[in-house]
Image (cartoon, rainbow, N blue to C red; front, side, top):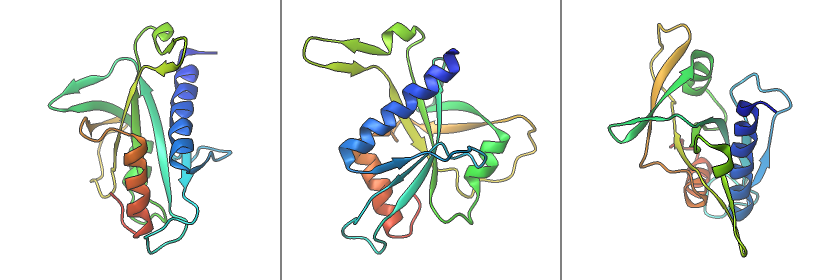
Length: 166
């Protein structure tokens, strides 16, 4: 399997592990033609205006992240940028960018009593960002303060249950 495909699978596995811990139902569209890699739904969410809130995520993975000014500077394809910045979507959409070590042997550590995934992942909403004149990629900032964790996934679902994007 090509390295980029392995990175994609590692990213999905990481997200699915957090979804399991958070009690969320993950699903993947059969065709990724709308910049959605994974959809997360919370069944019978308490405390919200909507019972089964759902969010959608575009996943990206990199071993060569450019970090400056407290953010990952990520070159996102214009098609993904346009799909994620739309304001007329039924469900909130987010870009999630995972950083992994350059050496794929360092992605996972196997220990006697546990396995550790060596990565970090961050999220950002591009909703409402302006059009671009770029034709191939748009550099977007993913704040290092917005780490994608089980708790942040729950917060994004909580906002979605209120009908609000982050």
